Image (cartoon, rainbow, N blue to C red):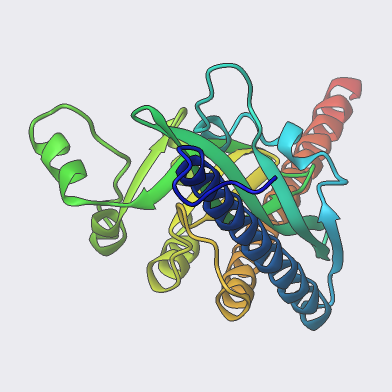
Length: 260
């Protein structure tokens, strides 16, 4: 039996139909965008000579929970941050990744989904101090002038110090890590945000999901940073080996003198 046009139920039914069509269109559009994004990132992986996985088959979300970026999600009952479109490769001895990270924050009473592109490097030979590097804004400068907060600055490189807000748990170790060469590179090709901890390094532009061309350039810049860290680590190992060699030689001399 059909409803009459004048029936009191006709408006709620029409409203429900319109709502259902709108929801269906939104889901279709999101699915189409998701498929297109996956295809774009997969094509990028082939261009860069990297492997590709649509899902987080490496357990990256669990590994990276200690970083500031992965602690931003605010959910009352559960966390549902998700990593997708994972590109993986090697730079020397360093395992490198590029992926999409989507998480939810609370904007007042309204949940808001954030999606962005993240670079991740993993090298068990690194011993990076905990640090966070980001562009220095006017409010950072104001906080410093008011004595409310301060960052790590390099008197010999005011350009770098003026451009970045650098914080770290152990200042002297952070200073040693940020060599003049690394400072110069970051000044010319900033990755926006860098976070380091032990043998992990991540880079990202907050709330920025990059298209393939921008993601390619971003990945290449981050890989150059990795190469600089590898070279620094290699030189430190050479210095350590030289110190050990000198210590052994000194011990031999001391032992020889005692035997005379």
